[in-house]
Image 1: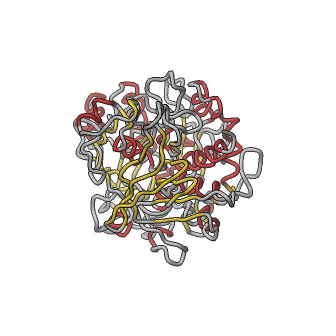
Image 2: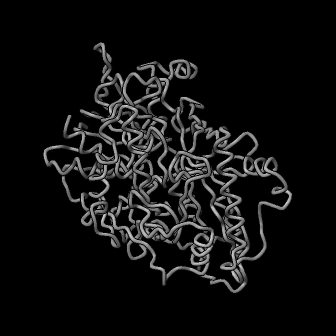
Image 3: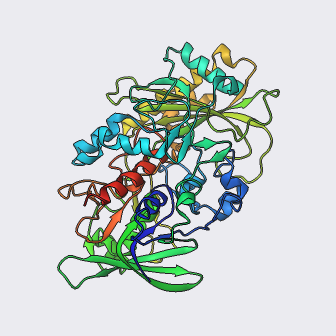
Length: 520
């Protein structure tokens, strides 16, 4: 079996790459996915297509999720990390928040030697992928495959209205469009949701591309390693070793693109002999290319939850409704614009991000306090040379004091907003932090380090940058340094996590790399 391009991972970036590259009818594309492939919306399980479902849903957790565990901080319990294992990837199980990040994020990428990734350079790709149903201007797309919308104010839940009013009372400006480059303040959250359907790449890009004879999509495939031609001075990727249905297959390709996400892509690179030489040798893996940055620079948004019970008369059908309103602001003394974000969403107290299977029916309000651009970074390392053994994920959250100080500010802000008159009759008792945890900054910091969570925005583990950067894994075209015929295209190539949820930026990466492939 020989293809022009084989893409590993049918998620946010991989699905777009397969769709865009297969637009060239003489170019054959094979798209591989470890999880199942549902060829139409009718055949897709209801929790996957339903925009009200979440990663803790039993069907999603048991059949469509990698269910990683990770280290958050030295004092926190093991952390659950859901990532999509289905055609559509994490875009098929996520919360549908469709934020882009700050223009400063992309300009910072460009300043690190990636000049093709400035905000001005990537804006056309953002516009190309979306149809924004609320705003029609130079910053928003009107003909892309993925629909974006915001809940109108007359549809906000009581808690969303109270959140908005409490933020306004605290002095934050109104923000009707969080995807405007100059936006800040409180306002409706853009969501990739259309008529209640989660707009994953499976039901958008790939649904349009499936009829093409030059595109093959295969689910249930575990990629064991990339295969190389080592006969020349510079290694060249020539295919993959793949396990499917209990059998091993060799697939030949002119080019291999890894789009397995910030866990999957560095994991495959390491298993294939690309990474820090000492780590590879520890597990008996022959070194193809000594690239110490593989798996390093693990970025995310440190998050803690302030939780209240809700009043007994709160709407019982509120659980599962996507985030309606959020607040973005710049922390005190910070020179990073919009480096903080706060959400407040009803949740079932019996379900804690996938750890508990049975809802209690008792509603709470979860304030998600989040550092939207962290200084600290973690790392991914091999545990085994067996591709079925999850790598070690150490997020190293709150390891930088600047992140601790800013997260503390967010927690205190949430507690003040909860005392606003707008929440009268909505909030019940505080669940956590407990009063003892608020006695001093030191006690609050200790609570945060015990409760720190992923923002579900892991990124950066195959950092994009020039070859002179010792931690860079790929160049700005996604090409792995020192290897021919091999690219990475997903959230792992971000030099730093953006100041937003990462899905829309990962989609943009798929669009942008597809565009750049045509220019090299």
